Amino acid sequence: MVDGLVSGDDLYDHSKADPQARAFVTPSGILGAVSDMYIRLIPTDLNWQPSPEVAGAAVAYVAGLFSGPGDAVEYVDYEFYDRITLIDAGENTSQITCSRCRSDISVDWLGDVVRENGGVSFDHLDMTVPCCGAVVGLDTLHYDWPVGFARFEVSAMNPTRAQYELDAQELADMASIVGHPVTQVLAHY
Image (tube, rainbow, N blue to C red; front, top):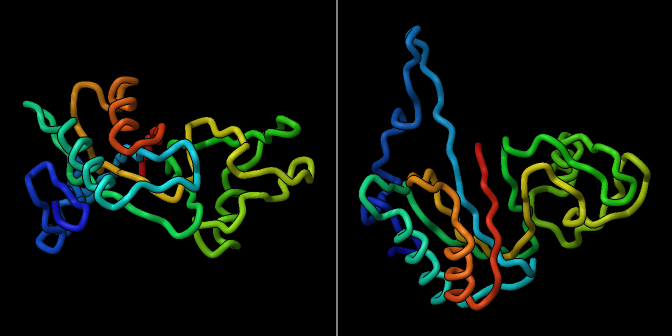
């Protein structure tokens, strides 16, 4: 572990990464980008944070989940945020529903909120929704694919194993390690 970073290949030095490694050639010879998948683990209390030592133990635990034969993970890392931060699901999120009037809200609206806010970290989550004009918390909206808001996360980039996401026991073990219940956000970028 170096600065909270653990790789499936022991230590992954991103400075030595081949920039072409994130691309592929299609059968027609066109260079295309490879997308990334993340498992993002966050506490259920959006303000809660563990100690850095506990965060390191959580990273080691998650990295170990992807260390069996045929398993892999590009890297596992933790991040502390100064403010409540949107932990999004990337391209997995395609629909948002208002928690007040149950109308659909365009995903583009959330993108606009993030841009107007200057990023994905927020001082408060209360926003006026475009459908009914109500002020609701971003964390109370209904997303078709789980997202979250947190000041701490552990993320695993491009994990591979027979069962992709963490199961209930693994989430319970993670909660025991960090000392707080956790949930997962599965993201695709």
